[in-house]
Amino acid sequence: MPEHEDGDITPEENNAWDAIVADLSGQVNLGPQFTPEPEPKELAPESPDYIDAYFDEGYEPPEPPPIKAPDDAIARFAWAGVIGGPVAMLGNYVIGLGTVVSVAGLVATIGGFAFLISRRDKHVPPGEDFGDGAVV
Image 1 (tube, rainbow, N blue to C red):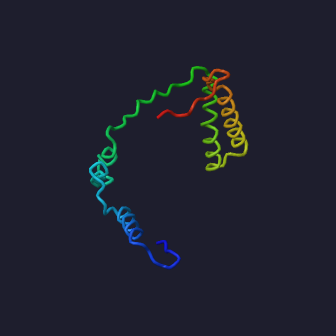
Image 2 (tube, rainbow, N blue to C red):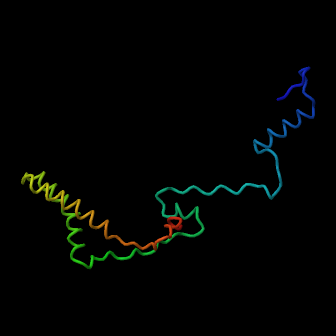
Image 3 (tube, rainbow, N blue to C red):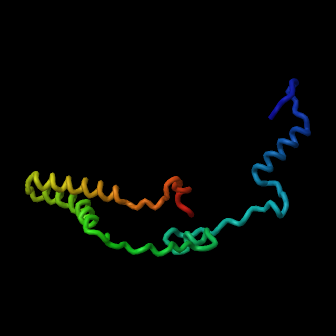
């Protein structure tokens, strides 16, 4: 508390400090417009209503589109290289077939990955940015 040069605190200052402390501790009734909302009931995290209890409406994500196979044969070979290359290298490590299989798996992985990246969809027209990201 502030003190005057003579060390005395005036009763007005003392009452003001008491009002501030009472307000911070929640002892002052400020009227019905400032009453706090009741605490939500605690739910166990295992209960199915645990998340929905804190939201007015639930969120249902949209059904994801089905994954379809690539139409052209080159893209199928690229995917086979991306997936089959590491499998071939792992098989070589487990069985010990030789370095030729490891090199072929590495080349297939890198080549397939590079091909798929080079042919990915360019769905953004030139001159436009990618937007603001995900929309929630």
